[in-house]
Image (cartoon, rainbow, N blue to C red; front, side, top):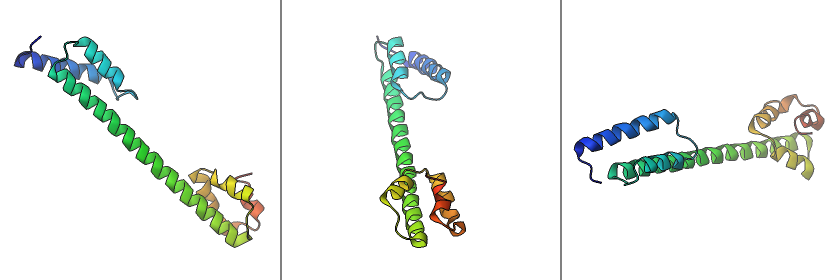
Length: 131
């Protein structure tokens, strides 16, 4: 099947309307691509270009989400190291069990522990967040 300029415009318009119907791109962009390929099984250049673009967008979105997760994980690890270091300075050597519990905390809880470090009279005051 050969498409002329007018047909190509109709395909682009139809494909654009199909994609708008999906709203935000779903987790698996391949679903959209499969629907497009079923609608236009001949595989015109327009369809292939759109399929490639959607796959690339999905790939880029995945990379961005991975970077964000990595940043958050790094931030949490840095906060747990700071909390352990500050609690050790204030109360002396911490047990491995206590350190392990602190390392498993989320960033919000770690920030609370660090922010309140000067208010703690004993290590038990901080343990309420991880015991």
